[in-house]
Amino acid sequence: MKTFDVDLGARSYPIFIGGQLLSQRQLLAPYITGQQVVVVSNETVAPLYLERIQSTLSEYDVNTVILPDGEQYKTLAYLNNIFDALLEARCTRDVTLIALGGGVVGDMTGFAAASYQRGVNFIQIPTTLLAQVDSSVGGKTGVNHPLGKNMIGAFHQPQSVLIDTSVLATLDDRQLSAGIAEVIKYGLICDEPFFGWLEKNMARLLARDEEALIYAIERSCRNKAEIVAQDEKESGVRALLNLGHTFGHAIEAGMGYGTWLHGEAVAAGICIAAELSRRQGWIDNEVVGRIIALTKAANLPTQPPAELSLARFNELMSVDKKVKGGKLRLILLKGIGEAFISADFDPALMNASIKACRESQ
Image 1 (tube, rainbow, N blue to C red):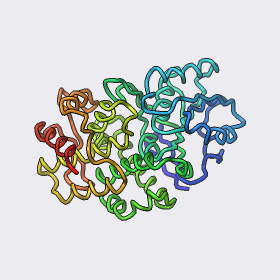
Image 2: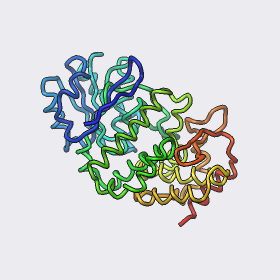
Image 3: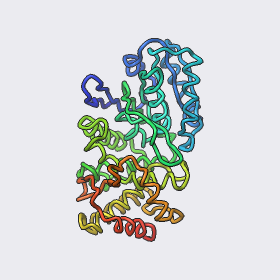
């Protein structure tokens, strides 16, 4: 098992990474306050792993909330299901929420924990690769709105993150690839050697080689933890974690939440960001080619959907969280492992980049 901390002073917390961790009570009990526990899961994950968590926590008063599975249910309306359960069980401020699921479950559980009685504790147990390497770490919580993804939420750090790599055995291939999109992102923004490792080891990841998965998850989480420790609430360097996300969020919202998986949309968004960086003269054709080749090797899309017009793309991006002073800021590249925040790109080149990626083969 690998263990390290997200360093946030008094609010620091551990990340545990390894196989068969769900049954290890000693990894959960120290982070549970009081006797009340509410486990939030979804209709896909609960039949697989809820009973195991309930058995591990048999000495606690455990209630459960089962949400429908899908990004389209990440809304204020379904968030109320969690609040209903908390109130019906008469949960106090000593309650601990546990998010057992992917990014949607984690984000919604965290937002409920941030909001219930103005803040209670929660633990992340991510069950998808994407949630394990990204959304479970860093304390971003929230829900979607029809006009924009993750526009309603709060920063609320978990007490711990328990990453059981054995649960990835039940993850379908499409979801696995979607998680790899976020893994690739870390190599691009701050870790060039890791990007090179991914180029050599992508087949191992797709084959679910345990050693390769643990290495990639740990390296990704360490990169994110280091950035979050520098900038918890995204006033600066943490924005680099959004490489490809402005374009990706527009794809998700424009196509209807759940049509494209988050990682798929981010993958296409990264390719657009790379193309725009090339057109701005910051990277060359070779770098773009490596990015596209690795994305394809992970069985991820490199093209945005043809159905999404440039006008709609721009409309959706105008309500992105990274708009500041009326100007859209994008995460772009000066090289592999070297990302930066820019509001000085040419909008005409951005539109040309979207169009070129959409029409590429």
